[in-house]
Length: 306
Image 1 (cartoon, rainbow, N blue to C red):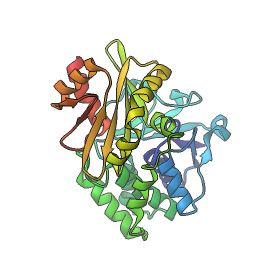
Image 2 (spheres, helix red, strand yellow; image 1 turned 120 degrees about the vertical axis):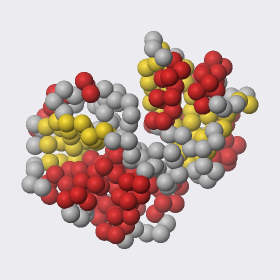
Image 3 (tube, rainbow, N blue to C red; image 1 turned 90 degrees about the horizontal axis):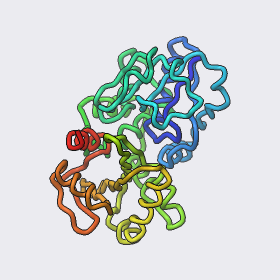
Image 4 (cartoon, one colour; image 1 turned 180 degrees about the horizontal axis):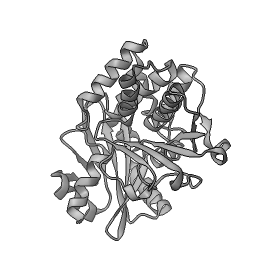
């Protein structure tokens, strides 16, 4: 049996790709199942709840029965559930520039620089003339819109737009679908703020140190900063201590204005970000001239550290 999965606690892209790629394999006669580890990101939960879709299987229930593993929206060992055996991974589908092919020695790699891994999975259906089921189609469409920030970010390609348009032609997507997605990840409370930032945080090795980059993609970003801004430095300090990173920052993608707002309490890292991205700081905050995703920022930072 083939398990199609993603990293632990997957976002909408990893969830969509796992569900849809498993369906694609089954439609081609393979014995495959989508199974996910951990807790789904709340955006993925929103799509599933809103349209009353079936929840993906808990991968822990089947991991001991699988012969092969297909990974989606992930291409290195960071963030994977410890139960995943890299030797069993036969396919990796991802859209990041940074990956380590040696992590999965038996895998065929499909690493292509599009805005969303869901675009690559959608193309599997398109190329074979297979219409995905409603659950897969809605999840894929949502993932493409989310990962490209409604086609505003710099990693968006014509392939992302074409894949989304093709999905629109296969299922009826509600007119408020996009707004519902972005609203679902833009509501915070003082009680859940740390958990939500932690869920969207990742760390990366740069030389001998680890740098944490948390990322939020939200509407009404200024309202968020007005209400929660005074808490962010403390949350970052707690998060970095918990993740054992040396320093880091928070990138708030302001969907309404089409910019990033960085929050970084570390002066030396501010200097690195200024040299890398040409931004200027006012206290612990800086604003970019356009949307930059974390996967774009990391390779640029590497040039500074290297």
